[in-house]
Image (cartoon, rainbow, N blue to C red; front, top):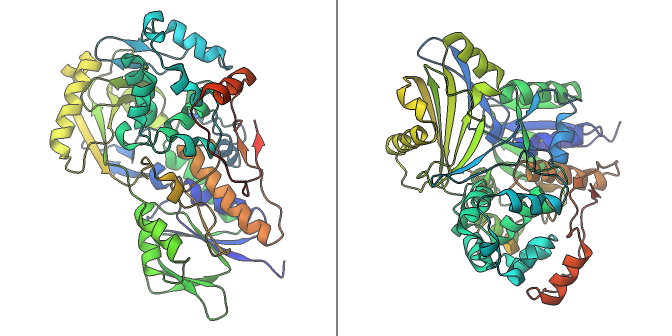
Length: 505
């Protein structure tokens, strides 16, 4: 088309690739700039050679592909229409050091029966403890609407909210702490509104259940290589290993993106889809971006505390009855254990060839002064408690990833969180750091923000936009909504505003 617009997408993670796909599919010329030599962002993977000579893929750790991730799955169907590379896990137990154990297999998927069945079957609930629950304080969990829930609960941290609701301590540690720590944050640093929105997304607001799928291949082979080929077939240009440094107005009235090699690209629009530090660096170096208020909001964005991933290649298998993934509580700073050879083809092939196993340990919110060696020892010692047979295993090789680049969603931070649009209609923001007024989180928020960013540009160019799906943005039962209005916490007035076009599942 003679009026074909040109957009630069800065960042090659889920948000950036989602935006690039959405734009390229509508005939937009796309140049994607990624500072690393590979796509993926926090789902990236790279080759490494073990001491035994094996070449394997290392990543930043386990990710769960929940079935409520409608927009993520729609993106992935571009390269695998049947999603054959996603395999379901039959269950993922939550295990407490005191012996308490919960699971989600045999729990019905449809609300409210899922919540009732979970409470009835879980050893962490008893009628005596349930009778102590502060029903009035818990009512917002049953009637979630975004952004209103943030106006009701964003001032409070997740742990204080759970204490005020008076959930049984074991249930809080096993279930709700797993949700909060999936944001890589201590529950004392996480907004209660984020926790309640997650509870709605995964449990009370959807009928897909709490079980999830995992990739049967390492991320580069399952996701990024096929998506890169798909983008290139659409005419997109992928510049890997090319960091964007500055965005400014060009002489012809458009935008010019300068890269780390002193050259640049002239475009009509820019999608900023970097992590928190990358975004802050670009905005600080680009005085043409936004206005003073917007730039100040970007400058206040913070990263969650560091997290550590320890992957061990062991010389013997773990016990056959062990699950592929287990969440833990009460085992020091160990948050979960995954056995990769149970589901990933590359790890399975290594284990079959050597008679060993591949085990991964996660610790979230470990503190800014975390020392890898000491923390690694603690996690391995806790592994011996969770899977005692591993105590006799010899470590063939291991890799560690200590990172601190996930966004933090602290109490009181929602009002200043930047949204997808910016003061410049030609510049949009994407990533899980962005405010999205829908009940989405984590990987789904990243992809959803990328779609919304692309849709904003497409709409401005008079081109068709893409559908955006979400779980229902309200409580599912009229009687509970009535109780919330009648008995619940005061409800602030929500100012009307422009909302994204959303199809409710």
